[in-house]
Length: 200
Image (cartoon, rainbow, N blue to C red; front, side):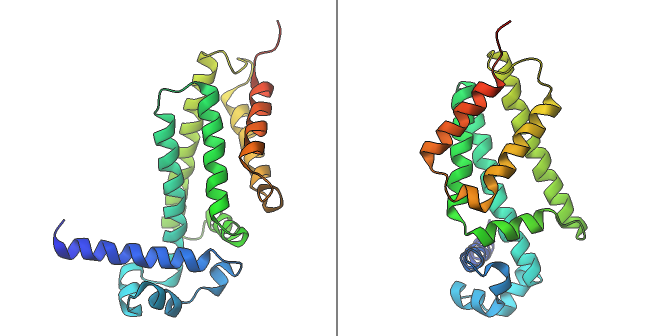
């Protein structure tokens, strides 16, 4: 990477961080203006449009980067040689830490974006993220079975539905605002007990 490319990447990073900070408020994306992003990042509006084409594309990139960061951290954690229980606990803590970083409206706006299908390019990115997350969870379930921590009667399909229901419940703003590390451990302990093999 030459000097010009490096400076361009640094400018883009400043713009994305400024947009994240401005979106991560009770007003969310509805209160975002390109003028505010330009002022906060110290970047001309024309330059921002050159980088991201539109305000909508900038907003999309902010949310994509947030999810990519979460996915990358999860991959690094799951690649470690840790027992199933410890990995599951760490995953839960990671999710809570990311939820604590953002305002309720940020999360609501991100979920709205996640379910959009009108933009083919965005839909492709979201589908890839969903598949990545799905494969990570499958790998974790397979490890749990090998270690005898998950009852073999539970199929992959059921486990994925079960986890999705749990995550959606925890992600409800009224609930996740009350979660802290202590409750995360309790929640994960209950999850482990519910999946463990029963007496034969």
